[in-house]
Image (cartoon, rainbow, N blue to C red):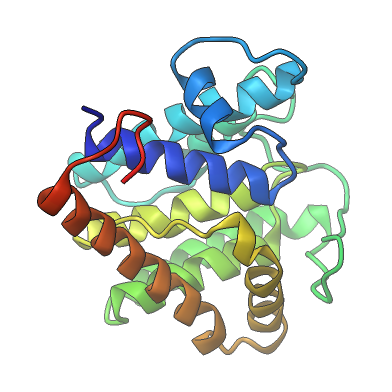
Length: 228
């Protein structure tokens, strides 16, 4: 029987990658995480799946050790996300300017990224009084607004979102690929306005879904294909 952790890792990995355009299905992602190659899929898509699983394990380790969030850890998480895909960019801040497709948000000039990331961590240290769901949603939004890396910002941002939730005793929030358009819309609105209620709502709903998954496991177990 698949463990809750395995089911959650699969669901989180599949959805976070699918949001970014990875074409592996849920079942194909499961197979890849088991070490099997899927025909007709690119090497990048395979690496995105295994890398994301490893990045989740990194986040779990940070949480288990009760370590504080640092710039080094953010870069390390990102280096796992892009490992073998773009090693020259993995864990390194972008050197050029970027745009976020379909969004109104314009990330800062590359030269300002280090100071913006420092400001993010200063805000984080001072925001401990926020409700964990609100703090997680705002951390995610502020990170995405900076877009500090050339690629992998969305996945890294969602890993940071769940770092904050998990360290506060909450289950991870899995943003589903079918909710992609709504997620992008409220995320962009939060980036532009600095008002985070809109993005906090889908995060809270995702946390509730994971809690429901927990209860489903306790009540009825998991199926052979690793789904509740």
